[in-house]
Image 1: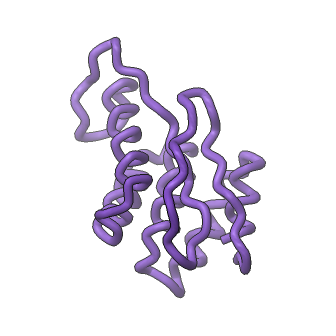
Image 2: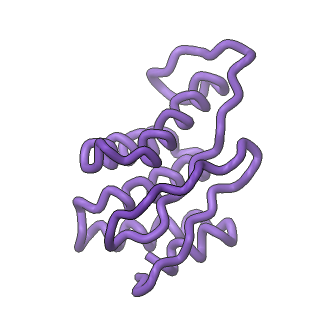
Length: 130
């Protein structure tokens, strides 16, 4: 997880996605990693993949405020840019907020606040990364 977070902090979204996908091969029910992969996919413009990963994360951790917030921000972004399939266009007053990748994948913890609208999502490193 740590290496994926470090790659994301440097803007290396393909590397981060690769690392998080690798974690999912051994831990497919890790909602935090699905959230992080969604953030990476969104950052790469892979909106269908991002939607799929956010929905999986929401299904696995429906109580997670951070995952819900990230997914809602993603949906708002899709409405605003009219670039995601299945989303109606947004009103001009809507401004999307950037999602935040979930720090740590091993144990759930308190969710940090989502990043500001112009900020790049920056996951925190966690011990024992892949």
